[in-house]
Amino acid sequence: MSRAIRSLLPVLCLATLLSGCALQAPRYQPSIDNVEAIKKAGVKANVGAFTVAPGATGGSSISLRGNTMSAPTGDYAAYLADALKQELTLAGGLDLKASVEVGGVLVKNDIAAGGMSTNSGEIEARFVVRSGSQVRYDATQRVDLSWESSFVGAVAIPKAQQQYPVLVQKLIGKLLADPQFLAALR
Image (cartoon, rainbow, N blue to C red; front, side):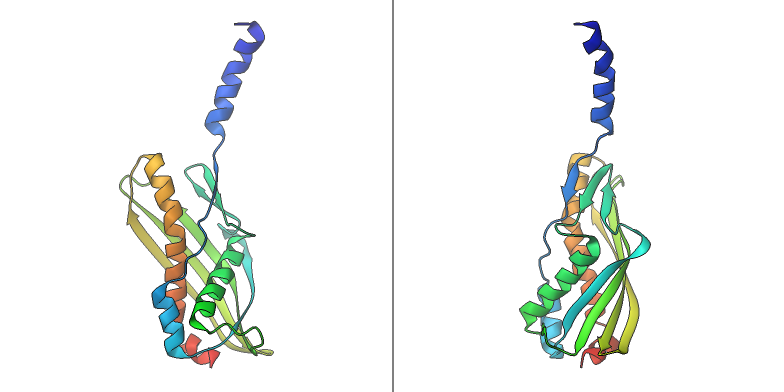
């Protein structure tokens, strides 16, 4: 083995160990419970702008044991907005011409995938409902979720990745369970 190759070998090994894989969050799948809650409430709304709070954890990516998980399109605020649009669309509640609009700010978005046998995630967002220039609802919702996992990264990382849409479903479910939110949409 040439001297040049031998001197580069440790550098290449170190670079391989330090580089994480880039992952993508799974596309959002609407929750039957959320769709039914919207149908039952009989509300219609448009979905406006969702942004990431300055300095928010997990706004553009989430670290899973050195791997970076990004949203399929844009950032995680866009992921949340798209999830809400999907829920409203399936329930027949998305109205692009509605005077009532739901917007929001993603405050926190994180997954802890380093546990021995369980892992967890949390998401927090501020939701604002406006009718024209009038604010009808302004509240922050937060949920967390735990699941059985493994210390082995080959098991823990994919499980954490699969749980992300479930975490978002749970946040939207909590929002839809807030009677003040539903009243603001009417």
